[in-house]
Length: 251
Image 1 (cartoon, helix red, strand yellow):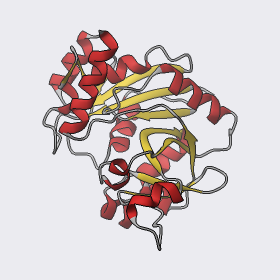
Image 2 (cartoon, rainbow, N blue to C red):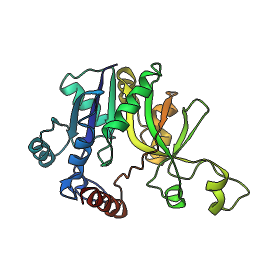
Image 3 (cartoon, rainbow, N blue to C red):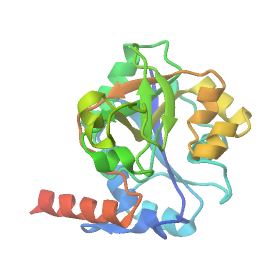
């Protein structure tokens, strides 16, 4: 399979203004994400899709291939589709690497791609990790997912799922297994095209989760479980943790 990656990066952000350009131990968030995947052996090309001339100029400065897209788009995946159609880019599989994942790395991407190649009939792939603390379980910014015995997603939610009846919340992690969703997707080209052809679904609008658009339409998500402890940047707390970890890595 031929894999490419596109990183959607917009300037506006509700919680963290100009999040993509925020400094994390000497480099911007978007540069951290790009450099985290550029040495992947499985990716044939990497692009950044943005709506900002400021981000475009910044990305050009560190050598990234950046594509301009309109500001108003329903989701990051819509932005990716616009970018690859604009530049006539084709591949068997398009990875959507969320622009708020500074700890993404070549090993994770290569292991993920190898997993998908061993399940070549997948439609959409994504990454999950077991939740180990109550803070992540309850935080709406941490998206939860439940899977079946074949590692296919049954549902994504900002609420803790599954609901453990008859036990206090503090004991849930001892009773059941919970997974958080990592913001990395792998779309077969034709499935990405289908995503774009669909209107935003009811569940997508309610949960503010774009992956529910395809799930509600009957498309399966194959989940690859990692044990890597990634920190996505959604809040000031996330940013402080990322800065601390990168500072420790460079000391």
